[in-house]
Length: 286
Image 1 (tube, helix red, strand yellow):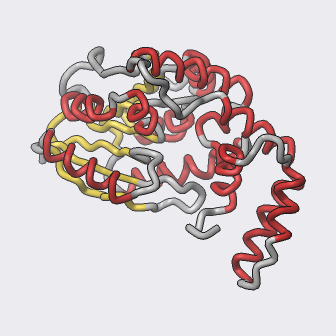
Image 2 (cartoon, one colour; image 1 turned 180 degrees about the vertical axis):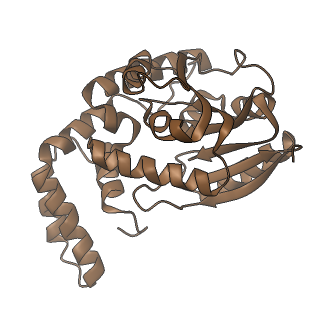
């Protein structure tokens, strides 16, 4: 409540961090028992409580989905081992709730997920990221929701992911779309992607897991390599750290190191999702 999170985002955080022994009904009661005097916060708590009470089953599914993917990295675990563990976790998460597996704050609701997807697509269009002749690489494509939304506005989109279950769902979702392709990736690097072969690279909620595996900076450099001159990379959430300044510092440092310029530096442009947006452009082009 203190940092102004939307109700959906707050519920996602509860699903991740609240003690599993405390059920949805109890959490709703705790929200109401706070009885704050500030009217907007009181309404916010009431909405949290109402959603928990009316969607207890969905909240439990989100909890189970979140529990599939651990954000802790044991000592001695290599990057490859981390990626393989994450892949298994995302396979399990997608089997429970495809929508929640890519956005916990959707609460597993496809309509909520579609609303956020539409917001992301609209933002990308405003940034000049889309175009009928552009080729886009989506790193961590998940269940293919953005491919389905962006296909009419793009020349070609390739979605890559470490989860075979998510790739299978994505292929079903986008069946019949000739401009869309999906493939499994190692998650360690982009060595199977040719140099200067894409006009844009998109990474929605994937860099936090690249950071967990210790390969985020490597991927940033790889993105610079696979982009054509003037191409752009949209990174929506660089990490799950609580310091936006740290993310901005890293993005700006990496952009300088790999000959890119920061165009959007950590904005929060979405009303249905708390993602923080960065946009960088490779030098060259027109």
